Length: 258
Image (cartoon, rainbow, N blue to C red; front, side, top):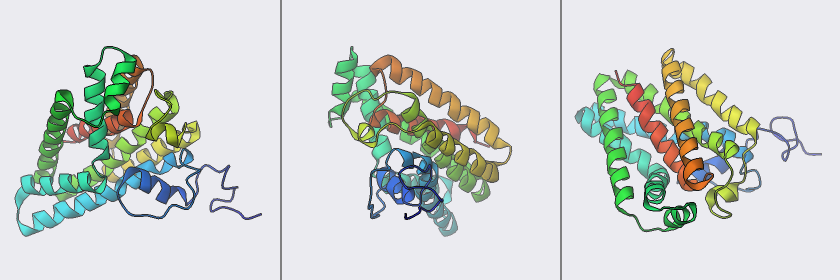
């Protein structure tokens, strides 16, 4: 019988090399070939690693802008633009849909209906403007403090914010019987645990002792988003996951400001 990369059967093992391109295809716009999507739920352990790709590209873009002499504000704008473009703005879209739905409807059914609507409302616009402004301000301050501060922060934030997603996927039921998150399936607890461990271990190398504050901040925000989603719509959707990634990213960036 053919063995998989980590020494177990492909359909039973926690980690497999095919999970990386699968997670990459789900969370970014990087063109990758996925041969088997049956491990979509198990591939959630790789979300933090996948987050390093847009964050790494954003860090490179910011460093190039600094080298050219554009200054911290413009370098932050370059980095932020790369983050948005490389993910296809899918997390931002989730944030806007979540803001529209959770605050635009009076019942769970109506909120889910609004979230599914491709049109954006006032709550969604406000959420996007405030979130982009917060990320730009935070990144500007980090680049002003120096690349040695900004680059590790960018990478660590990508790890922690992507680890929050499988945590919700394993701890909350699906709020609807369709959609991206439902299509991925329920994430096994061990996959979510592995995602968190990867984020923390790599975060230690990037941030040192600051990982304690950053990790606690990410955990608190994730818990808050979990409570909010359960109270408003009775579970999670792809939009909730995207919104959680964005809110955790903003919170951790602010926690890491010098």
